[in-house]
Length: 314
Length: 279
Image 1 (cartoon, each protein chain N blue to C red):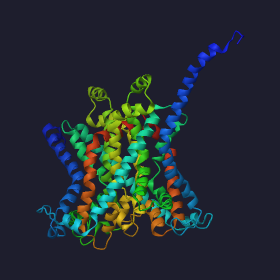
Image 2: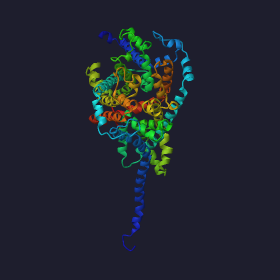
Image 3: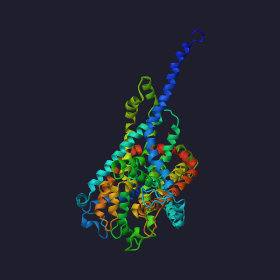
Image 4: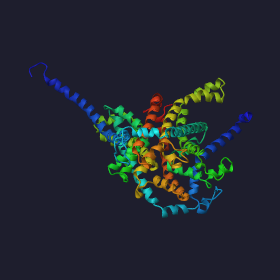
């Protein structure tokens, strides 16, 4: 009290600092509390199950929910010795790349078309977006109906044009089925590519085209040297995103063909599902799920720069 | 051919034809489903298939008289509404927290949400089902709602975040100066401004949940708990698929989704094109 540096002035300064500190801390706590429910939910029902998959893969449970005995790598060796990996991977890659090529090509064509439309572009775009919203179950059933033997409208048209032998069913043909499933998926997914390409087209500086016109460039040259290079980021994003979604998608192939005929549309996710729900071998299903996850992780790792460049959180 | 293409009118006609072709290709399957659902029994399974017939409501009556369709639609609605509410509530709180408060780990959470969005459902459906089953939640509405919320929340939260960022921070700073609490700022300033975005996210969650097949096929399996996609999937796999009923149910499943999607379309287009992909 007698010292010149009495606590008085400090005591005056402290509450102000405390309030400031207190505000920052309080704000941090409020922030955490707001995010916490989501974090708990996603951790409990997304991350824990993901980790549990690893555990499952070392046990021989023969019933879903049962723990089973620890069997080491037995599930892994069984999967590798099944002799199905190469074939099913091949079909999955065919399904994925076939869908990608079709969706991107058709999506780009549709985006360019919208861009050219002087009137009604919005309406045109809205109508073309509809296939993207159709639920997988409705989508699968429409295509099965259109390709059903005898009475399907597309079957009938294909057969009348002699593009397909009479008295056979397109979805029942081991050669044709995979392409029809791809076609259904192209129909379903092209609007997404269209949207992304359309947004990329909007961002191209129109003065580039004017300058090119002055230099005497023709339509093709403008497309080749201005439009196409401007779409590379969008293309990479689409290939990665839609590639992952397609390679891991289960609904459409399962509901359209169930993997048949003769396993010709049996993609990897169907394999996971059947091991789990059909044969009640959660261990092997987990091994297959982890292999798929590893493949996707590798793709993401390889393309991490491109993904970061195209995904932005504003 | 090339000279023909130099004629602007010919070019216009060609372009119009091309537009019509794309529209037809995109719209035909949907139209065909609607047309097939409205067929009389005698017109449905004929060779060659007829393009135009007199509409009939025979299969609609058939569906609601002979199947448990109303039950499946009630189940789907409850689960989808619940999922939408969960997403709107939890998502808007978290988006508010992530965009308006500074705290340790915020960036990591923002990025983490984006990464869990990439986890494919097929990788987690089995352990998730086991977890819900051990909690006694399989074949219950909360179980279905939880599963669908886990499926939709990462994407919905991410969309909501970008929406919340669009609301100028000056507004809540001003309110803070006036002595408003965090809850008041959320209730009175952020939420009213973010309402269209929050509602759109809810509709999107509803659509995804309504259409979901994989999780429901493990969780909602008991007869009286089935959602429409599950019941419809089973129906179509029976030996003699009743195509008339199937087309009616397929159309009734797609119809609300198409309507709701049209409602949020403008916002969806904006969100996808601005948020997902940069130039």
